[in-house]
Amino acid sequence: MPHPYADLPDTAFWKKGVDEADRARFPGLYQPRLKLTPETRVATAGSCFAQHIGTWLKAAGCSVLDAEPPPRAMSDVLARRFGYGLFSGRYGNIYTARQMRQFLEEVADGEADPRHVWKNGHAFRDAFRPNVEPDGLGSVAEVLLHRDYHLERTSRMLRKAQLFIFTLGLTEAWEDIETGRVYPLCPGVAGGTFDPERHRFRNFRHGEIVADLHAIRALLHRFNPGMAVLLTVSPVPLTATASGNHVLSATSWSKSTLRAAAGDFVADTEGTDYFPSLELVTQPASGGPWFAPNMREVSEAGVARVMSVFFEAHGMTDLIGTARDTRDNEDDSDRESEPYCDEILLQAFAT
Image (cartoon, rainbow, N blue to C red; front, top):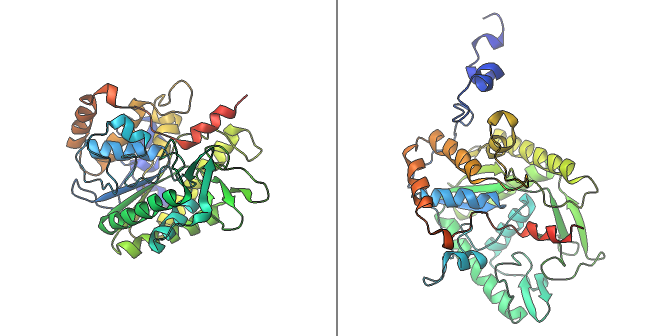
């Protein structure tokens, strides 16, 4: 062999792997290390884009776990408003690896911390999922009762899960200085009061994220030692940044850091994998455009394209049509096309 490049596959070269490739399917872009079938018990969590993944898997007939299903008489729109059916638990958006790690630690411990209840007028909110009860609850005790139930139901669900799909969304978070807990939103945006003596901005670095991912895997194995982990990175840009940088630059920094951390974690860890949803939506070579006119929301066509690549790579091409038909047959009046994102509330502060 004259040199190492002589026998590389077509996917190793831009000309064959991209320029001359079937970019509607992108063969070889995603080569799963983990086995997934319609019977695999899947749990989903993460940022807004994770809602699309769970929705499509359910529409295709896959076994997506749901720790807290909505009341039977509740409409889909109302259920979404109260945080039902967005993920495999009613935990709302989990944007950072640190937030995911701390949540799993709390689930394993099984006891809610009363220091993380936010007051909002006459109502009270769970600081870690401030929008699952849109009108808030009547007391701190009621919030803690709801959260204890949430932790117990999530623990049951995780014991059944065979594959945990986690979508990384952000590197930025706001931290409670006393406890070290991070929130999905800055205090004061959807409840609570911002206090610079109590709250500080964190922008997690690559090494911190990798360490958190290893901790997440270890925590998941406390519930089910055989659970596999599939990571994705959300292609959705930041709504706002507190980093001091332009939001475009901050988005690039955040997504690049998450992608690198996910790649290093998977490269060093058995029973894990990475799915390139970020690349399929954001890379110009992937076609598109896959964003809505605001350049932030991923279009329905973009989501369909991502999930088609996912199903085909797992040998479940026949489920693509099933998922499309299921979604097409849903009552449009009872469905919202865009996922719910706590972060979008920050848009209200743009002037």
